Length: 136
Image 1 (cartoon, helix red, strand yellow):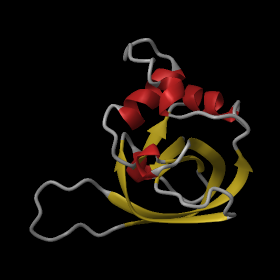
Image 2 (cartoon, one colour):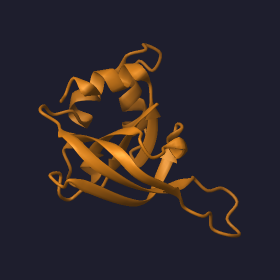
Image 3 (cartoon, one colour):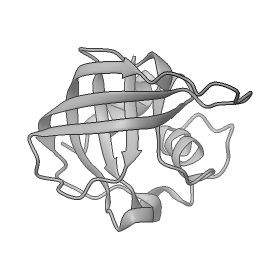
């Protein structure tokens, strides 16, 4: 399974990204060493959307806080960049894909990343991974 992460990334040209206490949704908590991950610089923090593809070199679950009933699982990950995106892909390019049942990879990404605008790690389908690979 491939993953995508939308996070605050200040320098998109880094060779390694260390991302701490990242929220997970849609299977994102299953991210593990060796997985492919597509990195999106969060537009909420001034980013431009898809910036890189990489390989997870470490992934560690963050312990839940005691006394808090409902908590979204969080993970610390380190990603080694494998490629930089050659074309833009962000909220502007996929916001029009809102027919949640059409099966398109653009719609899947819009639903998982932008319907709820928080930064997060998400699991993505093989079709969405193939679609994202076209940007490299």
